[in-house]
Every structure is written in structure tokens, then in C-alpha cells.
Length: 327
Image 1: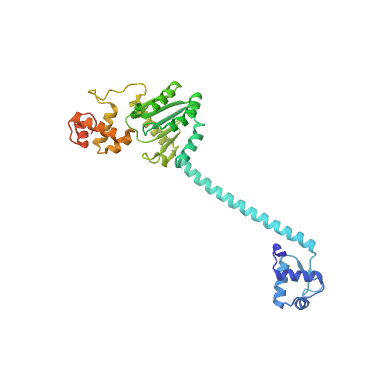
Image 2: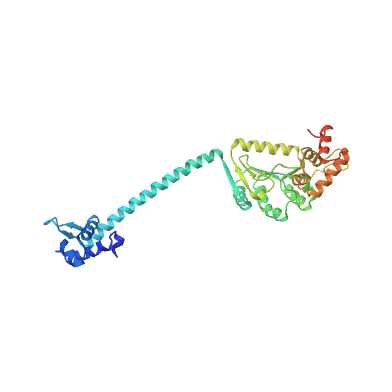
């Protein structure tokens, strides 16, 4: 019963016996409780440590049991002191942990890199980030035609940003020009102040906010795998320059690309030539252009005929030899 106070069963029965018979000495306790002298003296030592017994002022060999009420107050005070000490240790441990975290965070702040794992994590982060955009939002949107779900979910966000005066510039792939839903969405954005251009291919999915935060897909072939958030000024500045480079060479969405049968090759065909010259397969070309493998093969076949080549790779070589692309 009294083990909560720090005494064992033997110490408890000895204490109770001393309270019932204050005049009992060690010998009396041994006889009444059927305990050895060693067991009684060990119990008395325990009780003495707990301040529940004191040596008798008349006879140092005998002990006096402290009044239970006073003893309880003394034990409570001791436990409160122990609790305070424990709390102090916990606070010191917490302070040490916070210091370590602070040091780690400072190191991370210097690197300013944060990993977002999975598409849901990326969406949650972007939902929070878009609320903080103040001036400009730039986007590379590879992958070809956008799904109806993506277009629908992005409209409220885009509308809010544009109403707040945020400048939005987006670069899609040329292949989206063949998708009515994506074209309609682009027209909707343009009507509200958004600016859209297209290029034959894009290196990766990229979002830049206010020239201070960049979000890049960790895997350009699987953008659902997650993304990396970058805030280092030099890195963001380089990515911003990359965006501007693509933007300057991109074609406004409202403009009409040169027809496939024209003498001059259109940007999409030029990009196919460049990729073929590097030895990429039709499947890879299709993924970069955001078109089907069948469309990529059709474009490559027409280019082979146009240049009189016998293979995909030879097509690229002939194009480089004629100065159509850089070797």
C-alpha cells in the first residue's frame, strides 16, 4: 500500500508495528514480526532514509516512528522536490534538443532545400504557397494535354492569383495545341491576364514564385514521385534564367505554327531532329513532346523522307550536316 512512497513490504510492516507499539525496540520487532535482525535493520534504514523514523534521543540504539501526518507531509515535500528536479531535467533535455534542431535548421537554411514526397505532399505545399505569392508565378508544364481534373482544379487557384494582380506565365508543350480542352483553358487564362506560350519540349516540371522559391520535380519522367523546394538565391536565379530562355523562344498560344508541309520546319519538327541526332528512341521523343508514340513515329518518318535518310539517327546527322540543327 505504501510502496508508492518508496518503501517495500517489510519496511511497511515494521513502520506500522512501530506506530502501534512505540516502545518496541529491534528485539521486540524481530519477535513480533518473526523477522531476522538483518531484515529489521534494513527496514529501519529504509524508513530512516524516508525520514519516517528517527533515533530515540534517549537511546541511540532505539528508533522513534514519526507521526503519520507529519511523515506524509515530509514525503510529499520530498516527492515534489524530486518532481521539480525531474521537470528541470526534462526542460534541460528539451532545451538541448531545440538547440540541436536549431543548429540543424540553420544548416538546412543555408542549403535551403526541402523534399516533398508524393503528389499529395506536393499539392498540399503548393496550396499553401499560392496563398503567399505576391508578384509572379512562372510554370513549366510538360506532359502534353492536361487532364480535365487538373484543369478544373487549377481554375479557382489561377483565378484567385490573377485577381490579386499576380503575373502568371506558363509554358506548355506545342502538342497541347491539338487538345481542345487545354486550348480552351489557355484561352480562359489569357482572357484574365495569364500569358501562355508553347515549345516543342521542356526539361522538367518547374514552378517559380516571386523569384525566391523554385519547385522542381524530382523525376522528370514521373512527376507524381515528388518535388524539391529550392530557396537558395543562386539556384533560383539560374532556374529563372532557364525559364526566361525558354519563354523567349516559345511561341504565343494564339499564334499559328507553320504547317507541316511547308518548306521550313516548325519548332516541333526541329526538336524531333535534335532528339533523333542524340540517339533517343521514338518513345522518349514522344514523352518529351507530350504526344503519343504513334505521333512521334509519324513525325520522324516524315522527317526521314524530307531529308532522304534511312534511319532515325541518320536523320539527325543529315539535319546537322545541313545546318538545320547544331551537331
